[in-house]
Length: 174
Ligand code: SME
Image (cartoon, rainbow, N blue to C red; front, side):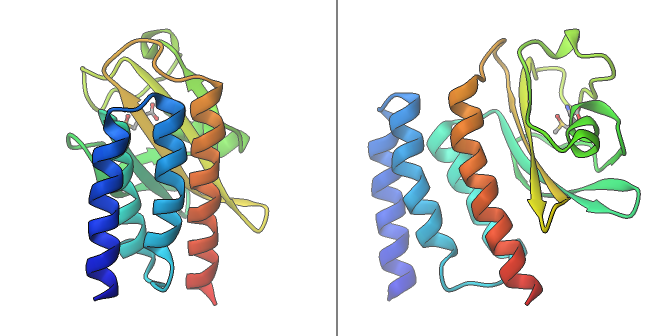
């Protein structure tokens, strides 16, 4: 019953959000994401739902996570076209965000040295590290098929999403 209610709430919020501006969509979406992960401790289930809500609410071309596993990033839950499964440390935008532990906004992927093109349609990108206990454990990657599609607003609100994912990760570790 609770799951049903959350699903109806999420569907209504998504419908309301798609017509709104970018900031309003983020503001509507964040409490919804928090509610979705509450009470569920399975990491993959939670991240899968978070990626689905991001895709549907923000209409991203591609959104997904990579997990830090040994010396590589390995693909996790995502929404969008198929993607590269493994990315080395320091490689591409994702590997660079892992190495440097910071958010990277790429207005034009063709201008980013070493960019890894999983899809030829991807034109701009934002990558955020998910930091848990001072270490990058995951990467959140969002791609657009439009040039210059991400800015400080996306960095601000997507950082709130990575903070939620970080909390979910910690809850799973306990
Ligand atoms: N473009 C990324 C690779 C991941 S895909 O875009 C999903 C990069 O350069 O790291």
